[in-house]
Length: 142
Ligand SMILES: [Zn+2]
Ligand SMILES: [Zn+2]
Ligand SMILES: [Zn+2]
Image 1 (cartoon, rainbow, N blue to C red):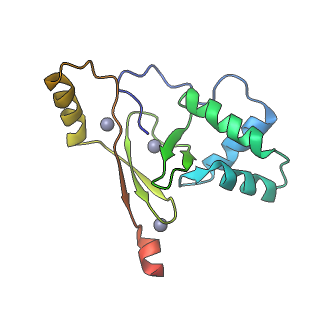
Image 2: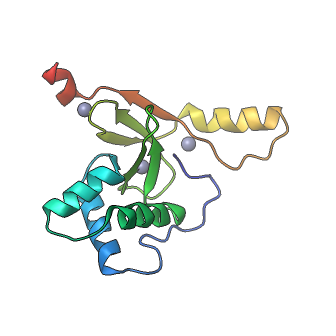
C-alpha cells in the first residue's frame, strides 16, 4: 500500500500514545520487514508485554489510518504492517517468503499512473504497486 500523492505531512505516531500503543510501535520499529498482527502479538508476548491480540489489531489499524505505518496485503490475503524509514511516497520490494522488504522509488510507475488517469479523464488520487520476490537470505536457504 502506498500513500496517495497529495498527502499532508505525516503524523508519525498518531494522537493517543498509550503504553500499549507505544509497545506496538516499538516492536514494529525493531523489524525490518512486514509483519502480521499475529506476529507482532507473539513478539510482544515474548517481550513480556501483556497486550491482547484485539488491541494489537486495533492499534495497527489506527496507526495505518493516520499513515503512521505502511500496510500491505500479502498475496495470501493477510494484512501486514511495517514502520517504514521513509515517510515520503515510496513503493516496496517484498520477499514473498520472509516478509523482508526494501523501500524503493516508483520510477516509471509514477508517470504511468498519471498518464493512465489522464487518458481516461480520471482525477488521480493515488496508486498502488508492490514488487514481490525472494530475498538473498531466503534464496540461500533453498
Ligand atoms: Zn514503506
Ligand atoms: Zn526472505
Ligand atoms: Zn508511486
